Length: 188
Image (cartoon, rainbow, N blue to C red):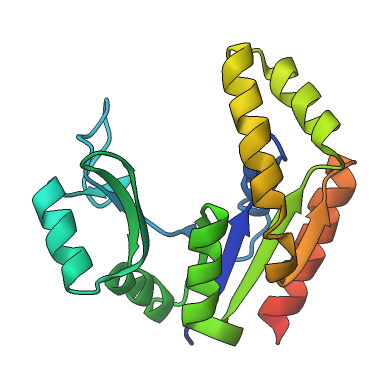
């Protein structure tokens, strides 16, 4: 039996990674989609495990061949994207494929797969709370935090395009709500 697709998008600091990591422990047969990138491997990263590592030319060639569900050139010659063939291979193996993507990528994947995909937007309770969380992480300079907040304001405009919006104002409740939404979707 083919798997299904679960797409997550959220502004930085909304709690998406925490919620996804929780879901991966819940016996839902979830597997991350393995993305492609044109950056070189870091540390112990291996081709086909963490990423598919392609040269910028290979990446552009695959774009030209319409092999990506979604992709983005983050910096000059630094691409990230999701290969259609990889997702199809994971689905055929019966895995429920999880995507952790930006809002535009999330909308593109949902459009491509329609009802086979569930798109979930994890939303902070407010921009002010998001700013507090980003400051509390103590990992970014103030100008980086303000840049992330400005990007979050833009990303929040995409929330209505997603199947489900989970407001993360209480992490345990957000985890439980997301788990129930996914269980319902997988049971369809």
